[in-house]
Length: 251
Image (tube, one colour):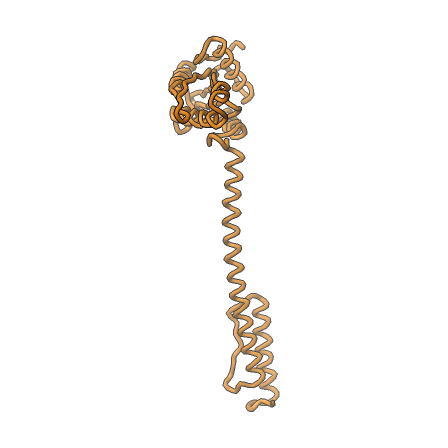
């Protein structure tokens, strides 16, 4: 049906406008709309169809953007969780070995700029296997969780505690004035760990052997100072239950 108004030039102009709107929509300019006149001819019908298509695409694109935002947020949360798991002991919530080594390395690098020294405590629970054997692995896990909480309760904000083995923990005391000061912290932790633990209807008391090494001994690598604290811990085990031993600096 021929248009009622305008000539060929007007038809071509209106078609160019519709094509332009289609191109704008294709370029993601979703607010583009074709003019629909009062005549209601075939060109108006095409323009109305283009407008409807544009509205559908705009709505779909908005939904896609929303989903992208949601997925990006989910990915960020997942990335944070992976980072946390990479640096945290799953059972106790303390730092794991990798996180502790990184923190210790940073502290060693800063040693020349710090007035005070630092210390490493190496702790081993003396009767952990007995708890597992008597009460089961769930009780053993609960003992580790409670022990981690007690250790953390004796530390300051700048200190770091980590679980590095089944029943082994290490602590970085960020600032200590002397080996005796570090040993005093170790004894406080040992006293806390000596208090009884509850496993349902049962209660059990255990002790810990704690070795202490300080930066004043000239230990300049993470491996060296942790090994010194580990050696002192074995000296503590040999000297009796619940002992704390300061590394002599001669080993």
